[in-house]
Image 1 (cartoon, one colour):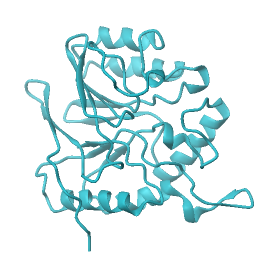
Image 2: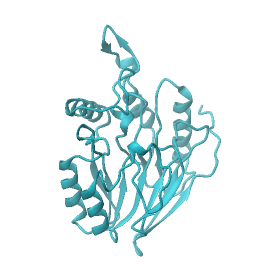
Image 3: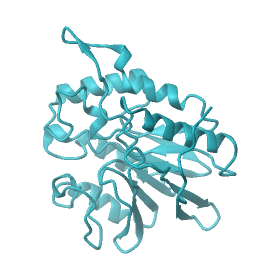
Image 4: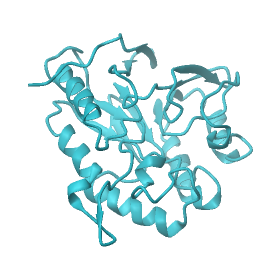
Length: 265
């Protein structure tokens, strides 16, 4: 299951929405589900509260997110989005970030979530590659050079690949994925696109968030690309379900039914 843009904050309706989904998963509403992936903007900002210039743990939205996810009966995996680098209300999540700011926020992220800024997961002979489309922000890019080198090595194993990151990419048929300035393009990330075209037989799907829309398209007329509607900004529980065919090495993707959020006792 893939959800995106939870934006955990002081808004308790978002807490209830996530709790409702977790309850549905734990009571086997989605039989055979193996895991949950969140494609970024897990929180609206990391800290909601300050006193005398110091951040208060009582307003730590990352800690709150981890606590909300704790009862989940299947593994979960988190992707960093631009709001996950927003330390508090004084920082604009779309503003430039220095290398020092990025390092600081990644240390906080790892402390509370126990996830690296980017990483890979193995499942049934497949590899899930979780990239970080904010890490190159200090260079006015999406991906930093060390991450691109790592990505190339991850692709070299030859396994079928699913990719997950936050910002949308320019695909075959232009669509309004989100703000134009936030779109990952061949001009901004030439090596990323070179690697994608070199490994297009191997890459079975790409999942992004950020734009708060349902959009489906292709890359190189072959790789399916999916943007997930915002989970946190809706009154419904919104997700994609990915079915993996390990024999044919392909995926089937279905969009969530319209489900009203239920109160959790």
